[in-house]
Image (tube, rainbow, N blue to C red; front, side, top):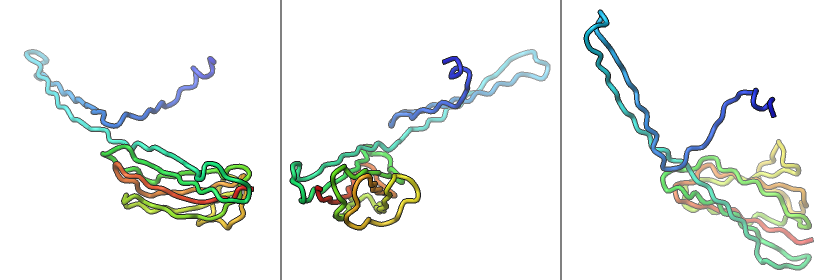
Length: 165
């Protein structure tokens, strides 16, 4: 534990959306003789923090399915900040066990102006292969969906299906 206390480093935190940061600068001067009076001036600058706020939801339909049939998964991304856009949003999804990838079903950008880009990997490591995989891939298998822009109070979704083994 002492080693952790001795190793200094930079600490970072995220400032909450809607926080007002106040910066005050002060200057002081006096006469050349050092006698007399001292005058101070202060100025204030304000900055309003506007961070995107992302929510993620995934559903599979139907919620009960038998072997050999299809389940369709839909992943929604929501920017819950109504003041700031989110850029380069990436969603990585591992295929569930006991299923085989069937097909990409579509994407919706929610009018956010963004574009979805799909890629996949058998081991969740680089290099990721661009595009949608061929049918029949089984777990472990990873899908990655990247959205270059998600506007304020906007949502988007990506949908794919699997076959239950």
